[in-house]
Length: 216
Image (cartoon, rainbow, N blue to C red; front, side, top):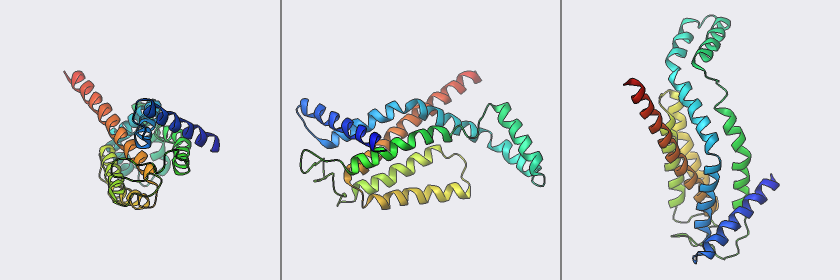
């Protein structure tokens, strides 16, 4: 993890030097550029994850029918679910794999920004006087909670009780822990969420367009 964290810190330094060469040295802009670069590199995995989630959501009604039909026969239920996955071309674990691949990078960027030694002190950005410290105005923690909610809402099509709880709990939890995190780290989270929201909107929009064309 130290190896990955050092790479992320070197990348942040690279983007900071890039802003400096452009005549406006700023760590906030450097973090935004780093976040966009990471999301661009992870885009193929994001596509795979979103497609898998969408496919699982599409077969949810059939899954419910099978669960109701064979609720007293777990062995038969598992066999029928396996057949359903096969017919739909869905792997229920496919959505987890991209996330597992991304986790080391997410953890690495967490430590990289948290422990980063800023050359420009204090590293200010917009209303924040010091990105190494928590945002005293609470704007970033609120944005982290709000963008987390929107990102989750975007991928939640079926409002089960569990989904409703997660839709409320996760944004509150993220916003709460963001109160004590360095502003630079929370800025990364907010920009990462915004990028994810934009990517998912683009993918869903394309899927809808393809569906309309096929319907014609």
